[in-house]
Amino acid sequence: MFKLNDRANHAVFAIVTLLFWASPYVYVPILSPYLEELGASYTIAGIVLGSYGLMQIILRLPFGITSDKLRRRKPFVLLGMLCATLSCVSLASSETVGWALAGRILSGISASTWVAFTVMYAGYYRSNEATRAMGNISLLIASGQLAGMILSGLLVEWGGWLAPFATGGLFGFVGLLLAFLLKEPEERLGGQPMRVGDLLPVMKERLLLKVSTLSILAHGILFITMFGFTPSYALSLGASKAELTWLSAAFMIPHALFAYLSGRYLAPRFGAWNVVLTGLAMSALCSALTPLVADFRLLLATQALNGLFQGLHFPLLLGLAIERIDGDRRATAMGFYQAVYAIGMFAGPFVAGFLNETGGLRSGFYFAGLLGAAAAALALRWKRAAAEASAARIRGNERSKTVT
Image (cartoon, rainbow, N blue to C red; front, side):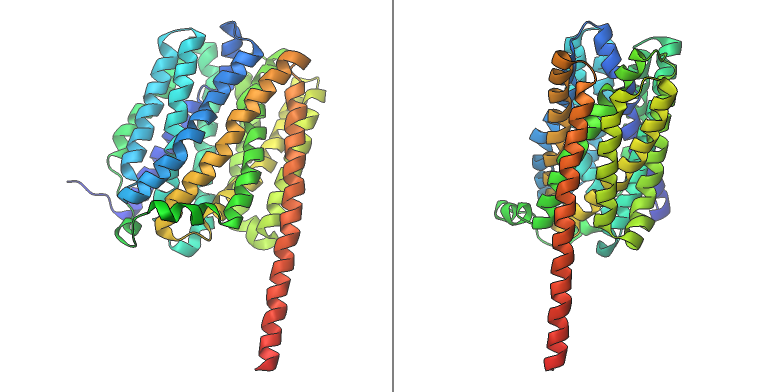
């Protein structure tokens, strides 16, 4: 059987990852306006948008545990690409809210396999390079999302509402074919398989619980704003469907760039908790200010800043989630982390849809600002606790040296 060398394997993994995220995100910017076009209320739109996260709450942890038990990541990668393809086929097959819901559910199943992607990629690196690996893969995530989202508005303008769904299906199918070439990482050969008795200790890791909580709030913000109702708000300001491409680019280019810089340069220099705190606090401010913007060009500027600041914390939270977890437990830890933060992906747009229905489209953005403020407050508290614990360890070491 044909086998890739390490360099080629990394390249193919990068392409598969780009296609995995481009497939659903080629229609994300137009999904909320498309649902409105189909006659869905904001509440129904919130349910459809939130179903993506709901499936991940249900499936991500079981996928992670099963992946650890089987010592295999590749079958889940293949499943993810298949469901991504079928999701777009479902959305393109009929212009009804029911088919849109089915397609979004399939997309949620696909995204639930992302736990295997992340652990598979981390397995290509040494165990002490988890943050670097997650910084690289965060860049791939953002780049795939950016590529899809930039195409979205143009495809609708040129080919109608169903064009992005058909394009996403093509991306998924090509990614599925390429995924068959990927190699399993060598880490699968060592250690003991995950046992049910090991699950609770992994889930009780304090750092994992902290970053999972912050990630719930951070993903709530993201799926209320750019991946939720910001495109609808842009159209309400008079933007055309094609101009949604500029909105996507304004958010995603800074998001991708700073996701890459965050783990590689900013966190080592300023400290991970400081960077996370800055990202959360400023994204809260940008989200809360969005409904005060009355001009599309100014909206582009606010979304560029929001994309930048949200890019700061996501890769760091991802790396911190598995930093203290043994290699053969990482898929379970990552499954727990991703299942937990999917609560934000479900609850954020669901609650925002209800608020928008009762109080107008601006209400959801204020709610996103409140989520960000809560996340920043928690990050500040845990940052101080980490600093105090570090200082206590240093004092203890100094006393030990003095006694010796």
